[in-house]
Length: 150
Image (cartoon, rainbow, N blue to C red; front, side, top):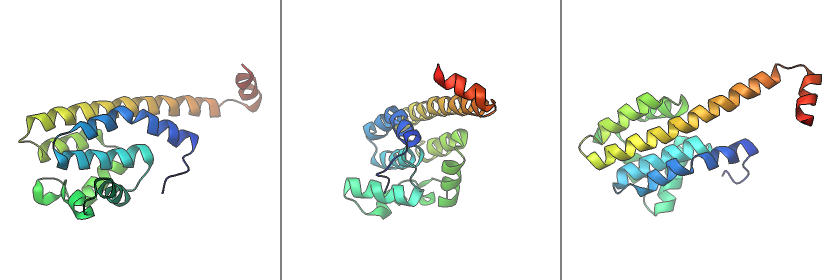
């Protein structure tokens, strides 16, 4: 699926290691599946459905089990809303939805807070890189060449 990562995607994947570690350290399997889906989506570029299939494959479980982990039936949000949260990188909305879904488990809440904190840290570094690239793109060609020599 994502065997050929570009340099940017490979960097993004590396940045997600601490968030991924929090995901797999969760003792609540429903939360673990959900956070793994988020990691695959954010750091490896998977679409939600493909990420859910990959998590199911990794754990040798039915994809419906992964899909059910964050379902509206269990206090989560509808799939379309979950997709929106992933695609728009709405960390506040994602945190709110996760905390609501796992509200009865203090350990899950701590994991969620740490996970969102790691995503924010990554999001800030991505924003800074994007800002630097935009500034570089605004330079004239000669200045860019001079900058790259140094």
